[in-house]
Image (cartoon, rainbow, N blue to C red; front, side, top):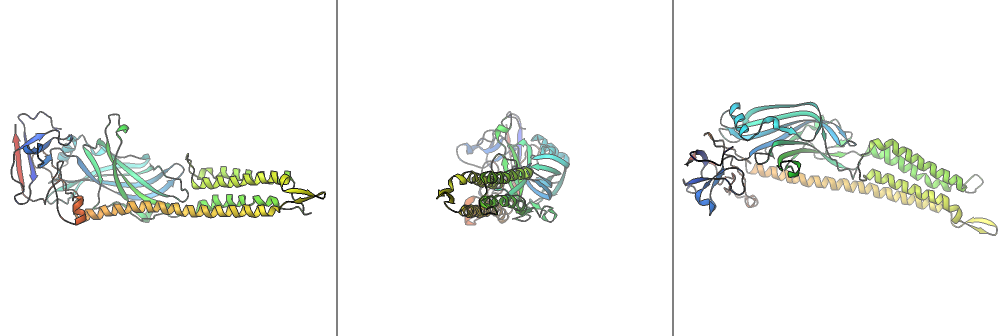
Length: 461
């Protein structure tokens, strides 16, 4: 950390300069409150009244993350969890000019950051690991090296499934990684140059789930809510998710078809005895109640196979509708003998054949089954469409990143007491016009191209 008392101290930094005559040596000062930044910032003395170049002394460490999901061998819909083997790589780009573990440890210590402060957030139980290790690797920035932090674990991860459309649902299952350091110090962002992958060839649940987007893994960064921290701090996190589309044949064959078959047996209470007369009220009620108890017993048997959530899923809606049809049949069995017959010349005659009721019952139930199947297909399509939109945005960001080269060029100072991390970020208007304009803004954005030569600036108080 850098104290606000800078008397008799010297700040020496290397900052990239503009091409041509756009930049010339100017007097600089230390400002501790530039646009709400918690970090001390070197600013041009005239920038307090007119916008000028500035650079943070201690910018936020930016970790570029990507993941490899080695395996997903279990998805438990009832407990809303899945088991996976995940490896995550987080890069500090252009951090050092030569590999020196001690210097990196010292730098991270100034931020209050350690490698073991990176952890999986949504783990329920570890089966293996987590294993952590750090290495240096080649950087995009010429002459510099990335510092790479890796973490791998085989664990059971919790995932809040959206199960309203079960068993016609499409679920993104994800691994969440967080940094236990405030976002003002450490930020995790997706690595769009080297994207995350799922080794789909080792997917053991191909008979249960389909992979609508293949081996693609989408990465999305976010921050925690201040209410989650007793100190009111926010922390950076990133989620790596792969989309799974449930193969619904098992639930259709083992839940929907049996319940539907039992329901279709209800109109048989209109059957006649061998002498041609209808069944009595008692026999009709016994038949209807037996069918309903059969359906209740079957629902208890299959209850362990359906999600235990407070809202209705599609399969539970279907079950309740089946019970509704059975209740209609039970009422018909009780009321038809009283209202379905009329006495004509001392002979009991049906007002209307009860088989018309049976035909209407079957037609209404068939119509509902058709509606149920079409609704399932429609909701599956909507879910896939939503995920497809997210996927297109993610692919757009990736193409944009590749079009403009490096997303971030982290420059490390060769002088003690100064760490610079400017960024190459194309403006939104430049993206649309395909121009190559860049800009310099407070907090580390770099204007114009970076030149290999650097200009020094110092200020003594």
